[in-house]
Length: 105
Image (cartoon, rainbow, N blue to C red; front, top):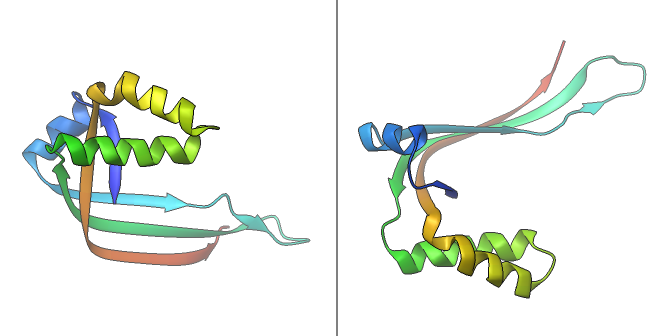
């Protein structure tokens, strides 16, 4: 799993001190007819983070991300060329992953 962020800051300092990380995501939830509560799905990943130092790997990951979110490949390439030097890519090796469906109340 890969992330990108600024080259300096709290997150980078924390990873340098301790490589252990936990990452959680959840969906917006689905509300069933007649029920005020939502069914929510979440995933928790625990693993070890590493700052990617190989610029060709980092550039490739930033490019993949840009191609996914920019409307055209041309716009993605322009953004990568403009900002890739300011971005830190982080690789997370997953040690454990779990998920659940919760009926929030």
